[in-house]
Length: 262
Image 1 (tube, rainbow, N blue to C red):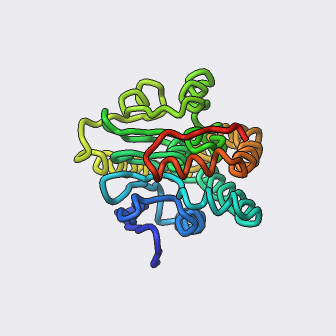
Image 2 (image 1 turned 90 degrees about the vertical axis):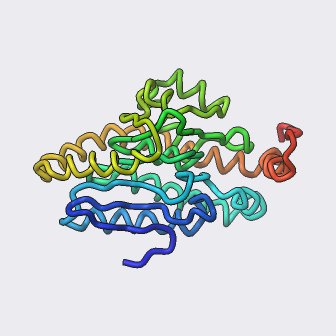
């Protein structure tokens, strides 16, 4: 099938799902946010696909959310609520995906992209990979999945320490904290390792692996049901603040923000 934001290639029983807009650093704008759930549904329904390797083109996995959506959501409540609904649908599509998902994180991953990466069944990084959820730096609540996925793998205390300060992790730190599962020495080996892991699990009895995945999804589902909607609506509330607009302006002007707390 033809897609606008991603490319899907089949390698026997493995589908490679590749973010494919390096010119915008694979940003999660409206186009990507709304296309990915349908792609995942197609992959779930395709009986020839027994595992998925999630990769990216370009130097970086993803720049995360599009900053212009912050301004648009601040100015228009209808736009903001539509973004909440689209984001909730996207996260649940990953959290409920019924087949093994292996992700190779090249370069850097920010914000919502990192939240989605941590829904994966295996995460491949290098020692210098950067993973971050800097929502608070943009005047926003880390509500689009980070408050769900980070505590599950890293523990609540470590998740608080990173999400409240908005600090990045290196790939080695993510591996040591349990947020990443496989560490390779350089970017050259990232995609190969992800495809190797996906091919290995695709070679196992598919009913067994997929039903095991469904059982494990219940763990993620419980956290999602408890936290996700609250997180999204708190993020929407923060998006209406003056500080959120100031954060975008300060970023563009390459200066420190002047926070009013309003």
